[in-house]
Length: 229
Image 1 (cartoon, rainbow, N blue to C red):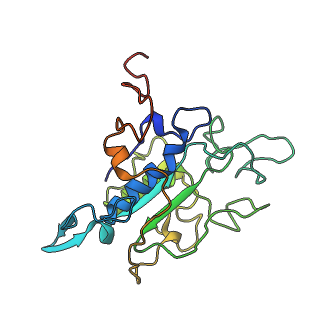
Image 2 (spheres, rainbow, N blue to C red):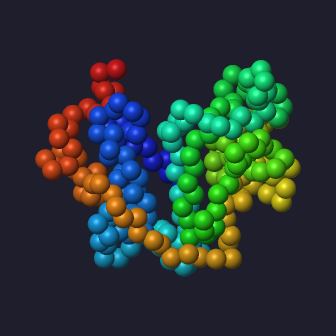
C-alpha cells in the first residue's frame, strides 16, 4: 500500500510552475507498474514481482491504482452535491447528519486502473442525478474503505464517532450488492493485459532526474518551498 504524491512543481493547479508536467508524471507512475517507461521501453529486464503464497505475480497482476485530484477541473459542476438542497444550497453532509462543513461539494475525478477494472465503465451520478438511490456515489472515504477491505483491516470507526470510511455512500447498505466501497468498478473473473500509456509530454527520465537541462528549465532546488515555509 503506497500513497504517491507528486512534487509541487508537477501540480496540475492553475498558475503553478511546470504545470504541464502533471499528466506525464501520472503516466510515468502507471507505466512503471507495467514495467514500461513513458517511451514504451522496458524499465527492467526482469519485471518486479510480489511473492504471494509461493507464487510470483508481476506488479500489474496484483496492483490497483486509484488516481484522484483534489480539486482539478472542479470549477463548475452541473450536479447538485449529494444530500444538498438545490433551492437553499444547504447540505446535510453524511447520512448521519455530520460533516456539513466539508461534504459534499463539486465532484472530482477518480480513475481506477487495474487488471480487474471493468472496461469503459463510468461510475457515479449522471447529469441531474443525486445519490444515493439511482446511482453509486463515491467519496474520498471510499478509498479508505477499499484499502481496509483489501487488507482485512476493519474500519477505524470505534463506535463513538463515524468517520469518512464508514460513512462512504457507496458502502452497504447504500450501494445494493456492494460489500465494500468501490466494488462496482471491478470484475475479478477477468484479467486484462497491461496497456502502455503513450503521449506523455516528458519521458520517465525527466521525473527521475528533473535537473536535466532538456526536461524542466530553471528547476528550483526546493520546488514546493517547504524549506522556506
